[in-house]
Image 1: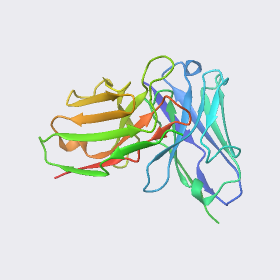
Image 2 (image 1 turned 120 degrees about the horizontal axis):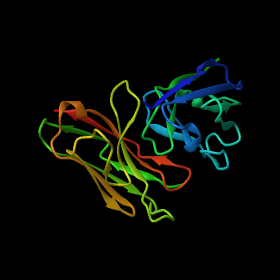
Image 3 (image 1 turned 90 degrees about the vertical axis):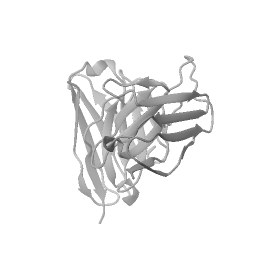
Length: 114
Length: 112
């Protein structure tokens, strides 16, 4: 069974950093690109970033480019999202999803507030 | 960036009646491979999104054939032939052809 489990969310002050993790199981993680998607409270879905299976191709939404870094460790079956210079508008539930969005995690909540 | 214009914003449908959601993209979603990466997802209240349809019209495993997807280039439609109570939630279209990937703004389906 495919499982994606996010962690690392929490309350953080504006301007600070946070690193999210997504542990994958039930499939060969190193064969698939991965995405981060977020959803602000009461709002729609926003794609954040993508990383290819071997980390050769990485793309970001303009809203996070230069502040967020997506990475992965295929040996640990883990996807990461390093978030810096956090803003109140980054407050959201952050999901990881496998390449074509067939599988999603349950999300981890990031709240940016002083 | 590709803008996904999804309509209607909300839909109230009686059990057993059909429903239809439109999604229009600001540019063609046909990729260099010739494939069209248009997905439909459903987010039930309090749950993670779930993909229903990929590549415009292919149903995911376990998705009832009451759901169907159609369209091409820039114009796409999700249809539910007979709405059931379990279909309530917010439906999103998602284009996976061009980075940055973009979602439609969502259609909230309510049961009348």
